[in-house]
Every structure is written in structure tokens, then in C-alpha cells.
Length: 116
Figure (tube, rainbow, N blue to C red):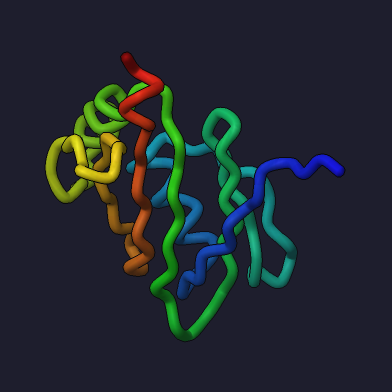
């Protein structure tokens, strides 16, 4: 049996507004949304995020990147506010964290062993 990548579903207060934020601040493309506006998607490269309307936002997603530093520089230039530059962590990842406009936590990372 073979599985493909999982697609996280992040809770947001307003799907359309969240899609625009992901597009403007992080460079994602707006994938789709349903006519009722309760769920939609954004994509960047092979990364897909579903955004679902919820009264209680605050989810998380871990996003693998080939070059974490390049992603951080791009998001900084777009006016996003990551928690600081990427750091090498004791658990073997280089990572940084970015909160979206609804408080969802995006951790962008790559394995340190993979970069050597």
C-alpha cells in the first residue's frame, strides 16, 4: 500500500480573507473555494493547505522546504512576520515558525542531515 502526502486543514474565521492573506503575504496561489465560502485551498509548489471556516481557529502545519532560508527571506520580503530567522534545532531540523492571520502555526523546516 502506498500513501500520498497528507493535506492539513487549518481553521480560519473567513476563508476568502485567509486565501488572500496566504497569497499576498506568503506567495501561495488560491486553489479553489466552495460557493458557500466554508472551505478552500491554497497551494505553493507541492504544498497544499485546506482552509475551513471555523469559530475556533488555531491549528498547525509542518511544511517541508528544500531551502528554509530562502522561504524565510521571501516571506519577510512580502511583509509576513516570521518568529525570527531559521534556527538549527537539537532534534535535527532547521526551522522557523510563521503564524497566519487566524493564529494557525506554520513551521517550515528541512532535515539537517539532508542538507549535508
